[in-house]
Length: 119
Image (cartoon, rainbow, N blue to C red; front, side):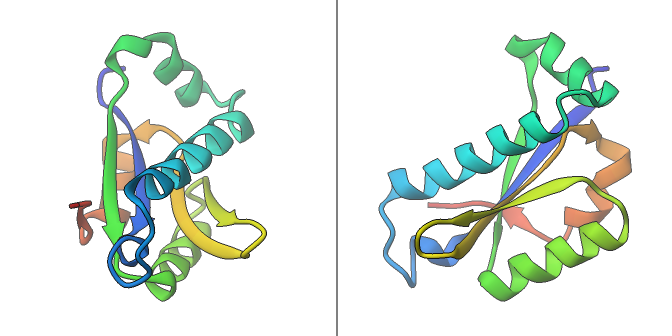
């Protein structure tokens, strides 16, 4: 399945308004992606995605702030889109959402209003 994609949505205000270092922001994406892969490791689409490691397709998008991230998580939950919202500890700050791998047409409509994350 070559049209499988994993979307990762990270708060763009972590780097700007909150002055997090780039490495810390990237770590949030890694945490969320690893967690969602583990949670849905038995899912058939996730298995297909992981069978071709050299051709994984990920798209990293930016959410404006915590409120936007929470609203997206709620919308995904309401539509039964499996995802993991990473909550950084011990600060208890929601930082990132990783959606499990899906066929692009099944999930793109939920994130199409978000822009690619920029530095």
